Length: 282
Length: 292
Image (cartoon, rainbow over the protein chains, first blue to last red):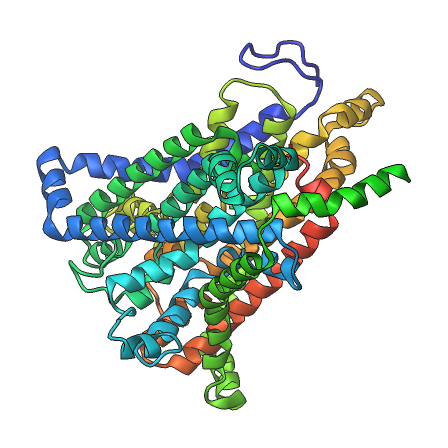
């Protein structure tokens, strides 16, 4: 095939197959992702502003969204703290089994969410491995909003570790040595030299963990108890509305969550355009 | 030699200013490992402990029961359709984005990544709104006797949606790092476009493709949220393995639920091991686009 009249919107190339490759990509993307998503927006728009607002402001919708966002925020905070610690330990220290621990961090990416969900429910149930000792202290985790946070911590952990890790690896030793030679003690070096340079990565990891947690379903519903207004997450409310054939109710919550996804994507792009691509996975 | 000597005398100095004392170090390692054991280790181990709570016979029985076998067959079938589709589309997307310069490239890349940011439940919801009984196309589909929701096509579509970015995202950086020089040379020497692709491009990115397939397959077989919305959970017909786990668990058939779940946990472990081996062995090729 000759490249005689390449369209102006792309640079000419002697490689063939651009039309075919782009055509296959756009067709699949449109059929599987874009048109169905547009259908959701269309459905939500067709409800009419008055009813849309009525559903969006309904007590149960607000409670579910508040739980989803609140629990995700708490879980992402925990993940930011411990994710930073784990990344630090993996990058800076050498100990037996380090490479295995490093690989194990990705377990939540590989483990199907339903499996994680029933396992967490079993562990944190009042007679479970962790649930029983906590129960004697009067702390209930399973079937409470706290259980939601526990599941979201599990699901979000790798995001923070995997965004912070490569940045920690790239900090030049000279920078820390210079700080030490200039008289900074270790704590001051960590807080004024190391933390500022990993902060963008940490923030990115935080937002990624948060974004994933907001939409999470499988690992949460088994441990949450799913009491309306108390421990019912937004994705579950969508499922319940669908089971009631209340498509409008499901579409409103769905479109609100989709909007939240777009805000998060925008935030991530603003935070660190290049950082996301560095991640090998998910 | 002198470099080596220098490095050796240098090492203790570096360690002293760049690291914490032995006590702090041990405490930090201990805390990190304790957290990982609690958050990741306990759930993994508990799956197998709960599955074997009533012994091997009960475990075995839960796995060979007809509904469990039907679920395994359905999951394998769904993955066998969804993964190859994603490989073809992922390779096409990577080819277009990595080898050509065109307007809208960044947007296209973001759109391919979009399914990662969408809740799995929303991924299922969109198909119900489109193809469900009261959906946009529902009445037309019903009139023509086509079943999508609560049937195999819906499950496959939802699975392709949630796994859409996996292969493209892994192959793209590898293909970008390879550049187009080798392909250009092959074309100059008279190879056809397809021959160039099969003999130059594909072998160059094969580990990236394998890595993407691994992650794509794990997600396809383990997907729960999106599939649960479109499946209708017709026992033995539209229940994939994760959905079968849910049904058993909700019936308080805990041992059977964990027995079936242990299959998925094993799949996760195998995926993790293969993924790690690929990362160790082919680090340069896989992260070619990722590092620096």
